[in-house]
Image 1 (cartoon, rainbow, N blue to C red):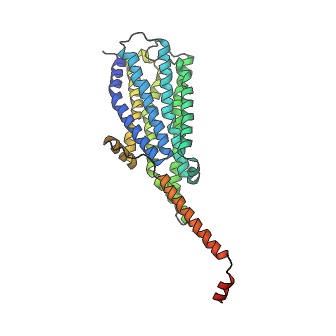
Image 2 (cartoon, rainbow, N blue to C red; image 1 turned 135 degrees about the vertical axis):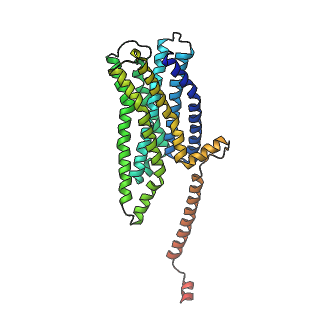
Amino acid sequence: MPCPSSSTSILLSNSSCPLSLVNILTLVALYRLSVRTQKALYVYLLALTGSDILSQLFIIFVGFLLETAMFHRDVPVLLLRSVSMMEFSANHASIWATVPLTVDRYVALCHPLLHRQISYPARARRIIAVVLILALVSGVPFFWWSDMWRVNRAPNNLDTALIWTHVTIIYFLPCCIFLVLNSLIILRLRKRQRQPMCQDESRQQLAVPGKLGKTTAMLLAVTSVFAVLWAPRTAVVLYHLYVYSVHNDWRVHLAYDLANMLAMLNTAVNFFLYCFVSKPFRAAVRDVLLFRWGPLHPRHPLHHQRTAANASTSSVFSSKRSQREVTPLSPKRCMATG
């Protein structure tokens, strides 16, 4: 019977190229949309896609090269531990990049006026930079992570602490945040659907959430798919910790490999969700595939310049009118009018 780890590693390597191509296509399309529209939403999606690509790089390519392609030769322990640390950092960044996106959608739906003030690309880039730094720091303790495929002993206290830290950072804590914020978003939408639109101000306030319906649906789909696809890996890791170790039963080992494959599938599902929900994203993907490299400069600055020019000219005319009204009439004009 073949070893499960080698067969699943080969399967992971064969599926890595399509996943990487899909994510690269997503990255290019989102970059074009980000430059063209200047919206913070696409900055968060860019960070999510870039983190997914890094996760594939470290987990699939580097892991496969170190464990399978080198014919199981001895690899320096320092190199293995360093790669393992970067794998965890990339995973943490991939998952926690979705948290600012969820918060942004919550503010957009529940506090639209505040969202217009605080949501812009520069702030989104700073938030993503902080998330990436925290993800890199959170991966440092996993330098001492014990490889389940190589270690032939039961998990000790250090392994228990690292496993629980891992599943908390990568699954339980993000899922709690997604559950709370998504529940608030859904309740807010239901409440607004029940409220009658009586005044013009209420109509203007409710116009923004109406336009964000597809974006909200995409967010709910992304977070739900994450919760479903990462659940098997979390369950198998805890099963390995408390019930039966991976090295004692090849079926548990195989379940762990398959759970990792499902978790990695999450990095490619987002592309299809974006295509299903967003018409601008489909147009951007079509332009990339057909090599339509149109202008990326946003149209908003020109519009704002025209608006400012119109405002300045109108202010000039209004000032001239006011001067005419305030300036007293000369005696000749008074006699003429008299």
